[in-house]
Image 1 (tube, helix red, strand yellow):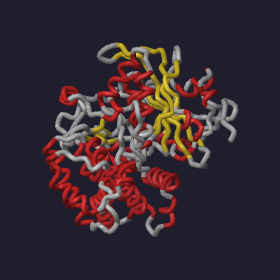
Image 2 (cartoon, rainbow, N blue to C red):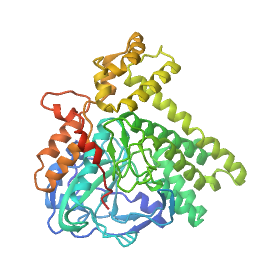
Image 3 (cartoon, rainbow, N blue to C red):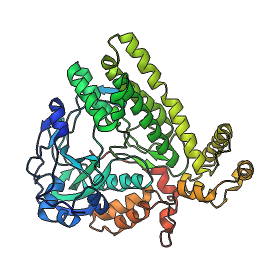
Image 4 (cartoon, one colour):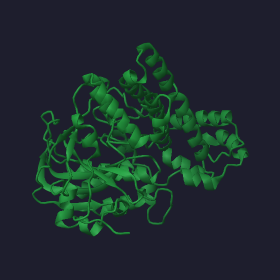
Length: 476
């Protein structure tokens, strides 16, 4: 396989060509002293990019957006959104750029996108920059999610820019290069629908169908089929979040993708002690996006998506609403099915165990986990060895006779997740110039199911005093 260098990198302009109304041509801010902090070599190879070339001046220029191939057309994408339930009609890529689309080695179209590359016309007064810590957080967590098998945007690199960023204090600036199936969001559709541009809305929907759900184009009602497909994709995604104890932290409609990939890792974190009310985000004072609320919020967001498609689903509004309502109301059922299937795997329950038994065991187990405040990840991994605390013995006495498949359980229950105290430790060290803790943490979480000697501390819960006060920040 030949890998691309500066002479052979081809960045397509499909989004900008199809939807110029949503694409503002722009360029990245200069990076005074770019310095590569971390490069995802396997992902680079998957994209057909030469990791050695990416380390050169030209390669770093691509990763921060200051040197793009001939024919590329970097754009800031427009979108709107409901943020914490409040409508904001104009958001967009305020500090990000879509450099263009790459065709990877498997023939898939992938976006190459930057965060922290400077202010755009969507910046709304912000500086458009990003700091090293939040960009490394997204790198760690998104790559951990990928290793867990959860649909996600990917992180290609983090490059320190040499430009200071003013937050509460002066921080080192950085740019994250991100890869996604696309950056189409519910908020993208809201932006167009709010403008009342039916022809643009139709082109946007057709673009989404062609990019993500081509079978929908053959349906009797392609736009209803698009809605059905997104409902299904998001039901599966949210179930996977819940199964590993992931808290996104900011499930605004502009942070929900049409593709069903997890996006925008801001104030995200993984639970330690199981608690449905878990909130890590410093800005979520009312707990809107708490762990246990995530399925309901996803359904709410999908209802907003459905509203944007009504003019395309049917000319008669009442008929369109009726069709869309049926589609969105499928979300709880599809989510429940996906979550049950995941719990069946986590508990090692074979196909001959009834759904009702799986549901009963799941409900009782989660209730006891919450009452006992047991570490979520550690409990399920210990269960693979049939090790449970005393408070769970009654539950285990009903589970053991079902002959659980412990080998299957080990494939479903990770040993290592990006535990919050370890993430903070790695980020603190990295901002002080020591990347060793970052690389050791990545080594653990990118092979999450393989228990290995020397990584014991990466499987341990946070000290109790850490968990009581831990908060995350969005990094803007």
